[in-house]
Length: 384
Image (cartoon, rainbow, N blue to C red; front, side, top):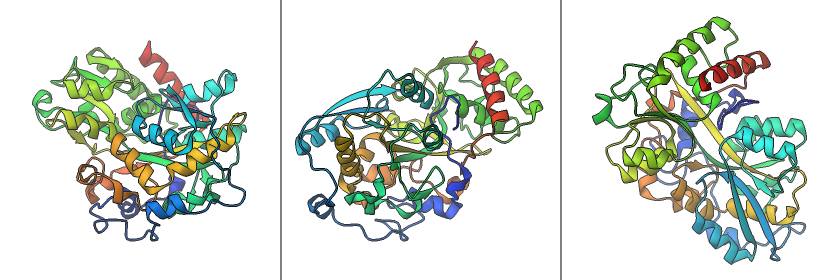
């Protein structure tokens, strides 16, 4: 994800094969037996985790506040209420719509947040910029619950700065009754002659849109070949008149209501929209799609670091993160949480991928500075 307008952008160093993607897709998915993933260590029962004595140097809840800066509609209000009840810590929630909004807010020094939720690539960037506290979440009492595949991630080896939250894919949501049948590719999505033209929506997300458009013209994300971007600019220019909205917020409601017939969409958001509109489908584009991960982190300058640690540790309890998954519709990086997930999550192929779809969902390498400049140019032209 680097310095581009996007929510997502896993790097190749996460090193997932199609098989390991299926393990991560977990929650009783096709690659593992019902229950926990076969390769995961046994997790303590939620009651055990909650009751286990905190480490000697781990803070004890003593009231106060926690200022949480999270993606819009990305955590259950009931989960936050329960955290407040159990700890006595009042949560003040503020929202952002892109990693770059988050970064700009921190760099401007105009905000006082204790816990933030950056995506994988942005974590790497924030560490490099010295914006994150090294609070060592892996050493927290519930740090033992981090799934092994989520521990030594490329953007935070050993989890010195972050704890895993949710992960998923960015694909295409559509109503086949309004798109003239199945949508199977990014080429379908970017077609100006699509039957859904005029009711197409896309994320306000520079990297995801340009990633997808590059795939649609036969190129790879992060290409440095300027000829690829000439093709992308032409593709997007022809497509834009049929685009009704460029907005990452409110996608669930627009698709559920039928306001949009097709939309670039995160798989968990799709899961929630489909609950209100059973006719919707989720496409894993044949050219490939992005696999991403979001994380909890503590920014430098946080005023309530102890409460931030308590919150992050609390969210690594399998029961708590499992409840959070039930609300947002994404799988998470905590062992044992599948025991607390709704059956509808485990049974949704948009969330728990088949082997065929898992092979299409790949981590995306971080782009070079040269590629970032080309993405910026394309996005600026598209948004004019």
